[in-house]
Image (cartoon, rainbow, N blue to C red; front, side, top):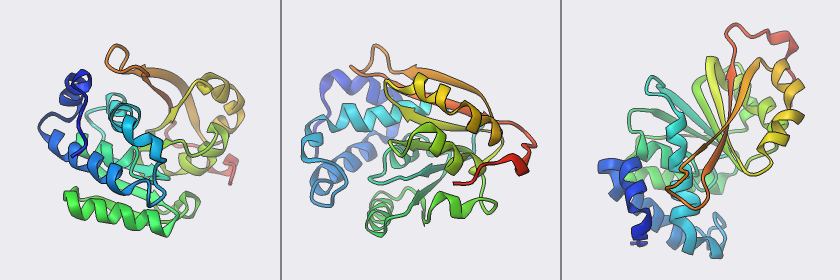
Length: 221
């Protein structure tokens, strides 16, 4: 099992509570199979807990207690979707992934850990008008303007898009302003989670989708 650095244990215990063992098992699966299956780079294994597992788990601090359904777009290795499902078992989590080999991996993870995930092999655009979720998440998928075109139509009215970003978050919000407004996205905010817990806090751009958004003005990808 991939060891959890002691310096990170308080944060891990706070985020995963009595499901920390499941997080351990997922981290070990990623460490053992991730590089050879092209899910993570070989150099990422040694920093898997801080830069990936906890980085994603901190995203749950941005998800309100009343949220019921969540979709993770471009789930890939299961970051952040699988991690969120472990930390928040009260959520109905759907993983949306286009690549077959990654979708198969996600199904294997679900079977091994018993998380009750829904894995959908599809482009996000193909689910527009078909599915909607209280919250849609994404990590390292695309720039915010492009991501908004793909994901905001999947967000229920008054729901939110939560996009994990890096140092370019503020610049991306400015560049995406026109697209966000056309897609019904309002009140974009940038927040950091985990300061004082991890070396690099998690940066999240949150965009709410206004109720009764005007559909005809939406931009299609």
